[in-house]
Length: 235
Image (tube, rainbow, N blue to C red; front, side, top):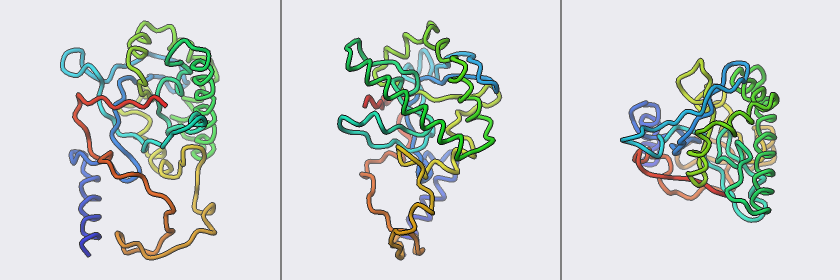
């Protein structure tokens, strides 16, 4: 009963926009820049999320939860519709040949994820706009924008997209939220993919559901951090 009461409390806090707690499957992550595009995928600008005086490192925004990456094949895993500049822009973190090759592979992984997202959310205008952004080589305009130097100055700078018609990033789109938890880092895992999984009564929710084989480390990632706290992933 205590665990279920704590779960109910968490869900109430997560549902409150001012609660400072991310809903299940999401976290607050520092994203210094947003790539702003119109509905046709045309590049508009690189938007700094912070303030030149009060917050020089950008705001923490709500995004689908970070996916664990490690080892020589870490490039095969990407976050859902956000990641660092290697994935989103194909920018290497250095000038070494292996760093350049790593960024190329990371970028291809991000584009593959985007293609799968479009199939999981057919007709989603935001996903469509981002697809057009890449298909029409609008990414090249980002790479020559004068603010790209500010992006490169932040090691592992995290980036996502925002449409000109919205005030929030694409990671907060209702459609994206509906499938975000299904993204494993390499593919979508829907209920039918778990037909052979074992089920049981959850001690937390009290409901009968599929038993998770693995759990993420508990490290307070669902709590909204200080706006001055830098949290970057460089894998």
